[in-house]
Length: 524
Ligand SMILES: C[C@H](N)C(=O)N[C@@H](Cc1c[nH]cn1)C(=O)O
Ligand SMILES: [Zn+2]
Ligand SMILES: [Zn+2]
Image (cartoon, rainbow, N blue to C red):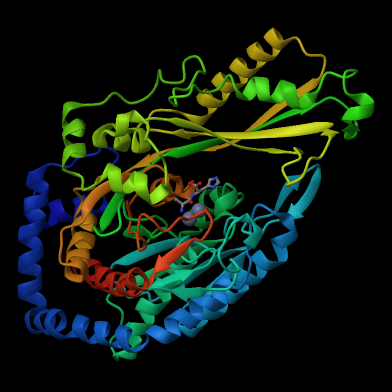
């Protein structure tokens, strides 16, 4: 096989195994080098020496406008899990479509149907699908991001209004600043910076921006697999890039090749048709809340061990090679502990164990109870119906259907043991874990871009969070998928006072521009 054939096959081969041979990579490096020198010697030299510094200068000159646009985006409360914000979600997608148009992309809003809430059909926000450039000589990157956010109220403990972006001490506070509006806008700014210095983009781009990620990406898989794929959307895609995660710590950049999946449960117990006064009815009913607390307390022990029978059986075994990877990762458990204000961490605070339990072992979290009297004050109600919410972060080899069945069987068994006359119902929504090959040239290109911006080699990391569509994009495109985080590990996504550091936002824009440049240099 000739070198060029090797390369062609390599770059179009779907890498399901987690490693490729170092021979292939060395071949690729050699070819990559001669490609640059033979075909575009002067151009490449000019580009690497002048273009990116010019772009970086342009970015530094436009910081105020980048902050202003993020403020506009944060001001749209696109909370996907609460249907009262559904119009805001739709408005957010339209807003983004206008912005894509301004950078020269063509796009369409794809209808993904309805979601059923309490037996009612509610329209899902459309998915924004865009294209910028179709030069067959250039590589094409598919960029995914999400425009929806988790709920936030000032009364949750925010220092300022969550939907008003506020700058304090070099940090931009606001819901969605880091998850995921800042990074999504980062792509726009990077594209705009190429325009700003009068240079054409080194790659073609395709965009998939949704507004339901925080609520299980409803409708998106069907759009990608049943519509966009058959229509040929992925035929020209060479790489997929997602910026919807964070550095592990606060100073060292990373590139991410794995995510946990998620299996989210709604456990409902009903004892009466309405809420009851405990003074009037207390002592006469089997209370739903007591049943629910009993069930929820059977799920996980105080050290975080999941008590559901068989749950660990399919977890991918830890190999010696994998074990070694954890020792070199830059992660300070003590700084991590302090940053969240915990007295003591699980896993005895041992770095490798903490990382493994965050990335490669499942964890079960109890999130809350709908219908409970959670507001301040001594409310004396017996809730008629309560819904306990918990989730399990899934890891490689754990199939959602298999895990859901284990959970249902376990809850049914415990419910029988409880012997309550009340009504119990459990439902789930799940997405698989994802891993990718971090030795791929795509990751090397992103690492070069990262080093250029942050002057250090990034860690290759995994992450404990979930982006349900990642594995779908990997399967639909058959191409290498990479997560390129913009924000820092202490950004507090989903939490009170979510923020993005001005530095991460601005250097992140430069990182995206450099990444586009580096991927543009990869052989076609
Ligand atoms: C990692 C990503 N930025 C994120 O926050 N993902 C969410 C996705 C989700 C799934 N169900 C609800 N939200 C997460 O990991 O919780
Ligand atoms: Zn999120
Ligand atoms: Zn996100």
